[in-house]
Image (cartoon, rainbow, N blue to C red; front, side, top):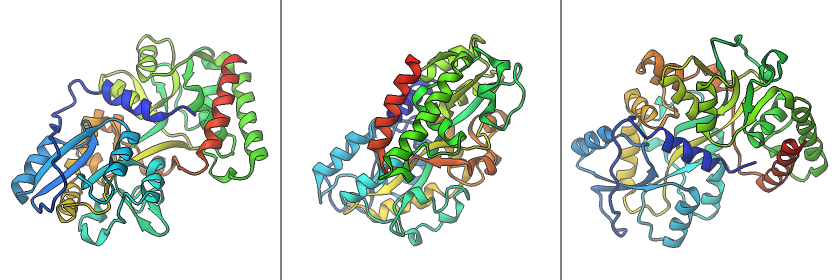
Length: 366
């Protein structure tokens, strides 16, 4: 499977124009015990400036943001700093969490110090992808997922990935091969994230090849395979395609721009990633970090602002009541659909990457 970190980065760049005020980056000074400072490493547009301003006013705690664009860079920085980190809070995706934890870079989260912990949406509260050995390591923030995207003017409503293989839409579909191959495995009842295939190479290969062969058989459905979110957007705008597998960010942008697009998660399920805020082990300002996290969860308006800026779905409860109709269509889903998201795991990724990459090349060549 291709590295979806690049997909997310592209989505953020694509959503940059006109999506709100940025959290201005500051230089993070060397670590020292400063109870009136909290240092946060995060992505562009994740933390609304209006929230930062209010938090600083209410608490007297200075918020210093360092922007990152890559999980690997963030990991390397923390690892290099060792027991004297300059950061209090980092932003980690679920599939990379175990790497940070096994390197002793993150502290278990004391949810008792976060009075607003119960204000997370049910689908994300106590998310298993943020828990290891019974300990929670992150506050869920934003979620991205692979959804079924369709032009509502030219397609029938569908609650199944079946529509991607419907003869009615021959040469009118599109997808990222590596991503949709995993979804096809889920559609066929096998494990597209390969978590259950550890030490079961033959079983994994059989499931992979079954999905590969199905996509080759249904190749006449596809107008074009795509790689970047901007490509699938343009195909929808030009009406070159009516149905696609796409990440939620590009789909949300189409909806916000007024195109007749619906984003949903079919009954067979899908895959996604979850960003979380994590307290760094030996954080120089842990008390301030917990105050920041508690304040962030205090209101659905904050979660709504984060969604508006980033284009991702919020993990906070009540956000749907704050957004307008167009925003709700772009950035929220019914709870029963949210429950269908399987968040990527870090387990058995080498097998997954090797098999998906090989099968994807065979689909394109087939």
